[in-house]
Amino acid sequence: MNEDITERAAQWHAAQDADDMDWDGFAIWLEADPRHRAAFDRIALLDDDIVAQHATIVAHLAAPAPAQREPRRWRWRWAVVAGGALAAALALVVALPRPAADIAWQTGATARTIALIDGSSAKLAPHSRLVAQHGDQTQLALNGTAYFDVPHRADRTLSITAGRYRISDIGTRFDIAVDGATTRIAVAEGHIAVAAAGLDTPVTLVQGRALLGQQGSVTLTSIAAESVGSWRGGQLVYADAPLALVASDITRYAGAETTVDPAIANLRFSGALKIGKGTQAADALATIIGLEARHAGAGVRLERRRH
Image 1 (cartoon, one colour):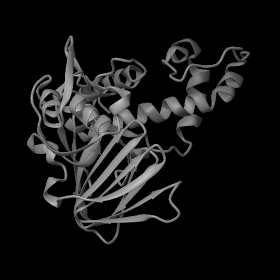
Image 2 (spheres, one colour):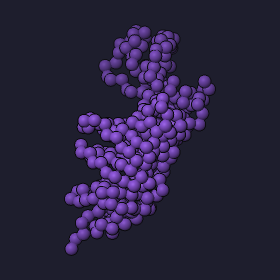
Image 3 (spheres, rainbow, N blue to C red):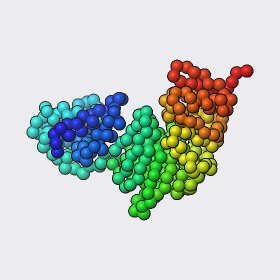
Image 4 (cartoon, rainbow, N blue to C red):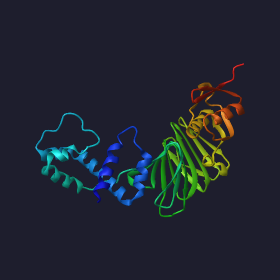
């Protein structure tokens, strides 16, 4: 393995503890060369094994274990201090079976399309994160919004965890949005199965059907199949959606924080909004349903009009 690649992989691994981790840059680096992913997996797995085998390593070094809790990341300090004894211990650790590391894709202010290895694709919306658990790209977890295009294959089922829901699919097109305790799932083509702890049996959603899960309740509605994932074309389309949900979407796509007076958070909205810059969508929404849009800095708060 090229030493420069290994060193860069170690740098990316250590950087994941930081709040300002550059997830976009990390994903681009991983996808640029198959050797990058192999190097990163090796570093991540070695780190996990060192932490798991800490007591064994200490015994090999004939040194007492420190009283404080070990940090999650090893930081490679003992490798310099310990010399040959640690090298022997690490050789034993590396030989153990290891699970694969997670693969993560994350977006900032712009969307991106992710090509999965089985031929499926996911259009990841702004400010969203998709994770392939243990490196398995058929076992995904979503936080944010994504539109999935999954070709039919009888030998595999794509499974996606979204909030408290688990979506299973063998070939279809659908959109998932997770925002706090709220999850929305809508099908543009084909069908999917949705399971959750609060559901007696999985719910089957077919083309033109949507599920809204909010604070433990589940609502099934009909929606125009062509409107599913409409955010990809610069438009937000709703059918009887809570106002708080619409405001959350405007925040995600327009970049201006939009909040709602709790007294009107459950008002329903049906219609379409164009995704514009700043507060344009929030202002348009306020005009359509007769609310007042109170501007404060770069954000806006929707309230009832005062007479």
